[in-house]
Amino acid sequence: MAKYMMSVFGPAERTEYGSYSSEEEMTQAHADTGAFNERLMDEGHWVFANGLGPASTATVVDGQGAEPVLTDGPYLESKEYIGGFWIIDAPDLDVALKLAAEASKACRGKVEVRPFDGE
Amino acid sequence: MTAVDEAITRVHREEWARVVASLTRRFGDLDLAEEMAAEAFAVAVERWPTDGVPPNPGAWITTTANRRAIDRLRRESRRDDKQQEAQMLHDDSPPERLGVIDDDRLRLIFTCCHPSLAMEARVALTLRMVGGLTVPEIARAFLVQETTMGQRITRAKGKIKAAKIPYRVPSSEDLPARVSGVLAVLFLIFNEGYLTSDPEKEAVRSDLTLEAIRLTRLVYALLPADGEVAGLLALMLLTEARRAARVSASGELVTLDDQDRGAWDAALIAEGHVLVRERLTAVATGQGPPGRYQILAAINAVHTSARDVRDTDWSQVVALYDQLVRIDPSPIVALNRAVAVAELDGPDVALAEVDRLDLDGYHAYHATRADLLRRLGRSAEARTAYGRAIELAGNTAEVAYLSRRRDQLGNR
Image (cartoon, rainbow over all chains, first blue to last red; front, side):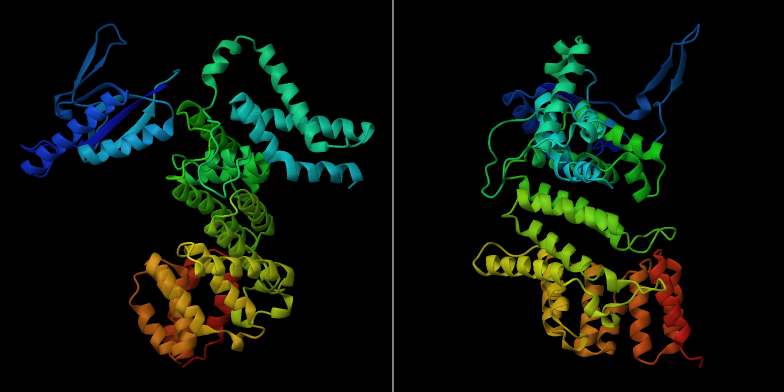
């Protein structure tokens, strides 16, 4: 088994419905994602998953100098930011990509699949 | 070339993919497989001139490469514990679908053409691992720096290993999409040779077209029941058959209607026609509708069946394009269909169809319009259209042809 991170990307600006266009869509996305998560657990792929707060709540810390330097906001300026992620167990990339396709459909966003190093 | 050199070249061409594929399966490491296969051939170059060519050269290369791989792994014994973990995944269950021959080379092809790799990486990896071309050869073929091409291949191999791209024939459910991905890679290699887009290169490069045909023959041998594989092979053969007639001695593109049909390669045409007939029978007996490559091959079969351009069965060509439009409603297919419509219903009907297409950035759109306008006697508009086509065309032979056509227009 290898571990992969599946990151979901969404718009920088969130509305009262998060990154969704309507309340209905938000409710449906949450339900679909919940069902997908249960499947991950049932089939033994689940390691961890959660949504993140908006990019505007991020702080970048550079602790390499004598005193840590703090910068308000995300590390890279972008139109889209990671809105949440899963960590999954999968035997190979083909399985991970299939799960990512379902994850993307459920949460209504593009998903980046990336293996962990040195597994 | 001596007899031994010839033997080495032949064995390299015939056995390279098999050696890399079986080593990859055994050791689970594409890098090691490639390196040891190359080393085994280097040993052959050194030894065969004095020792003679062994009775079974392919087996000799495989054994030599295997031994070297084991030696290498022993030397790096710290890898032993890690080796099990680092191995690429493959399963030994036979492929589910009938007509798929279980062959390590097929695993190798599917791995090199994995959809998670960039197209240019798939092309480079396939030519290196399956085709056995060297990195400098591939770099030359695509006019990029050797170091760039080397990095592209190294990066792709690194991703295969780190992301665990599996070494196996896809499940029957995924097979059609994955085969079509493989065919896209082969067709891209062929097209780069057939009509190179780079003005600094020769118009037609048979090294790439022939390599694409050789690889497609291999895939056809491994997937004989797949209609689209047969279709792509037929399409390549029927296109390659016209190579000698496609560019004039002065380096100008010769269009289909002006080609010396006596210079077409009769053997390739016969082979292509057999494949197309087999597919027609298969489709007629209910083996599913034909895909795009089969239809394109059938269109090329109609053209290559006519001894004279005037004998071309244009209604058949248009009917085939109608079929193609149904599975691929892209404007480029509609443009090619319009070229056939011009022969059947006249250039005015074709021009009306062409003018509806949104293809302003595509050289063939302007070249087609220019030709239709010329035939309708609308010279001023034709001249403008030829100008746009020349601006956009990258192929030297095509630019030469278009320029002559434009310059032949009367000044009114």
